[in-house]
Image (cartoon, rainbow, N blue to C red; front, side, top):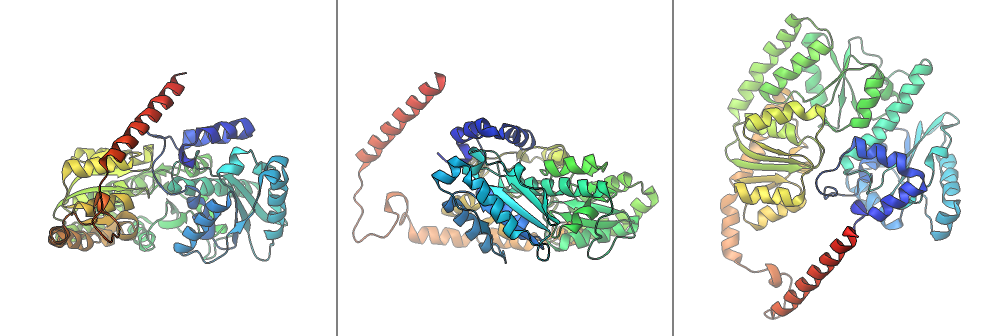
Length: 488
C-alpha cells in the first residue's frame, strides 16, 4: 500500500492530534473519485519552494528512504544547497525525543546572519505520529520558524504542496505586516499599483505580463511562491492577485484575509488575454480607455502570432503542474484539434473560466485525472500527439504515437501574451511530424521486447500461461477478501 493511500496512517495521524490539519487539507485540496492522483511524493513541492528561496534553510523529518528520494529529486531539479535531515528510530519517535532533535536542529540552523527563515517539513511517519511542529518557537533571534506537515496521505500532489508552504509563509508575513513596518523588496517599492502573480511560471512570462499591464498604469508584482522572504510583503501589498495557477487555495485565503481581490485564468491566447486584461483593469479600478489601450496594443500581435504559427493535428493533454488548462486554451487557439485535457489538480473557482471556455470548444476537461483516465482518452481519441506525464508518454510511444512530456517540454516555455502565442507550434508540429519514424521503428522491431519477451535473453523465452492464470486467481481472491472486510 502506497503512502498516498494509506488509511492506517491517516487514522494514526488523527488519533495523534493531527486531525485538524488533515481536515483543513481535505477542504483545501479535495480528492477525486480515486484515492489520489499517481504522482511523486507531494512533499517535493514544499521542499522545492524552500530550496528556491534566498536565505532560507529547509529541514526534513521523515523516513530515511523518503528523505533520500526527495533530496535526490531536488538536486536533479537544480537545488544548489543542502537539505537538512533529522533522523529517527522507533525509540526517538515513541518517546518524543524526535521532537527534541528537531528543536535542536532548528536552533542550530537559525543563524540571523545567514538565514531569514527555517522551514521544517514533517513527512508521513512523523505526521502520523503526531510530532508537534506547532510547539516550535515562532522565531529564534529574529529568524522565522515555519513548521508544516506534508504527508503523502494528506496532500494529493506536489503542486498543491507548494501552496502548503507558500500559504504558511504568507500567513506569517501578513501577521508581521499587520504589526508594523517591514522590509522593502530588494528592488524597492513599485511606484505603480501591482498585480501579484500566483503560481510558478516560465521566467519570461512575468516580464511579458508586466508589459501588458503597463498601458493600464499597472505593474507585475512578485511571483508567489517568492524567491525571498521580503517579497512576501510586496506580494500582499498589491492591487489584485492573479491566480495564474488556480489551486493555491491556502495562499488565496491569506490574500483574501488581507482584503485583496483574486482573479482566475491568465493572459493566454487571444480570448484569454482579452478577458484577463478586462478583469484585471476592473479589479484595479482602471479606466476603460486604458484597458482598451492595452488590448489594442497586444491583441493584434497575439492574433498574428497564432495565425503565423498554427498547430495542425489531434492532441490529448494531461499533466500535474496546474497549468494544463492554460496550455489547452493556447493549443486550441493555435488551431489544434484538442479532445481531452486532464489535470491532477482539483476544480476550483479560479479555473472555472478556463473550463467553460474549453468545454465550449469541444474539449473534455478532467480534474483529478488518474493515469487510467489519461490512457483511456488516448485510446478513445487516437490523437496525432499525446502530451502528458511520464507513464502516459511511455504508453503513447509504445503504441507508435508521438508524445511530449508536459513538464519539461511544454510547461517550460513562455505561455503568456504575444511571446506565448507562438511558443508551442514548433515543438508540437515537429513531434507530430515524427509519426513516420515511430511507424518505421515499430515495423522493424515488431513484437521484440514486448510483454513476456521484454528484457535480455540468451534464448527464446518460454511462456507459462498457467502461471499467469494462477496469479490472476490469487489476485481475485485477495480483492474479494478485502471487499468483504470493508463491508464488515
